[in-house]
Length: 267
Image 1 (cartoon, one colour):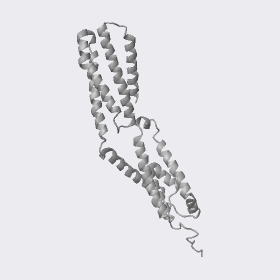
Image 2 (image 1 turned 45 degrees about the horizontal axis):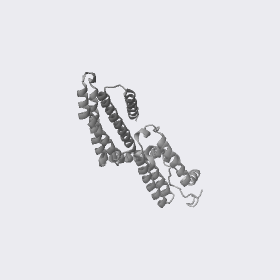
Image 3 (image 1 turned 30 degrees about the horizontal axis):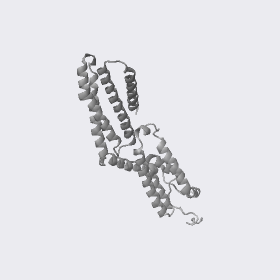
Image 4 (image 1 turned 90 degrees about the vertical axis):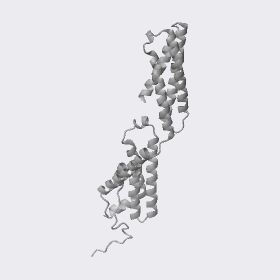
C-alpha cells in the first residue's frame, strides 16, 4: 500500500488554490479588489494569514486609488483612451505580482497534482467585486454631497449665457437701426453685459474645486469675453466716427473669437 504523502512533502495537500490565470481573469472583470481577495485565499491556504490580510488591504486601497484617479482625469482625455487599456494594464501588473509572490507555490502545487479552484468560481468573485465597486461608485456619484463650487459654476455660467444671448441681439436688424439707437443699445445693454461677463469668468477662473478641464474652459471664455468687449467697443468707435478704417482690426478680432469658439466646441 502506498503511504499517504507527508504534509512536509505536500504542504497544500487537500487544499485548493487560485491559478495566476484565474486571478488575472477575475481582476480584469472585478478590478484589484477581486485580486486582493483571491490572493488572500491563496495565502491562507499556504498558512500565511498575515500576508493574506495585507493582500486584501492592498487590493481595497488600490481599488479606491485607481477609480478615484480615473474620476480625476478630464473626460476629454478619458474619451481618447481605448476602454480596454486601463483594465489590461492593471491586470497585467497584478498577474506579474501574483507570479512573483506565489508563482513557485502555485507551480509546486500543480506538480504535486493538487486541485485548483474552478474558473467559474474566479468569475463569480470577479462579478461580486464588480458589483461592490459599482455600488460604491453609485454612492459616490449620486449620494455624496455636491461640491458647492459646481453650484456656483452653474449659477454663474447661466448668467453668462443669458448676457451673451441678450447682447448678441444687437446684430438683429442692424441695418434698419439708426446710429442713435445702436449707440444707446451699446451703452445701456451690450457693453455692460460683457463687462459683467468678464467679471463672471474672472470669478470662475479663481474658483477652487472645479476639474481642470472646466477651469481651462473658463479661461477660454474669459478671453472670449474680453474679445467680445473689444469688438463692441470698436463697433461703437466706427459708428461715432462714421468710418470703415477699423474694419480690418474688427475682422481680426472676430477671427480670434471664431477660433476660440471652434476650440470650445471641440472640447
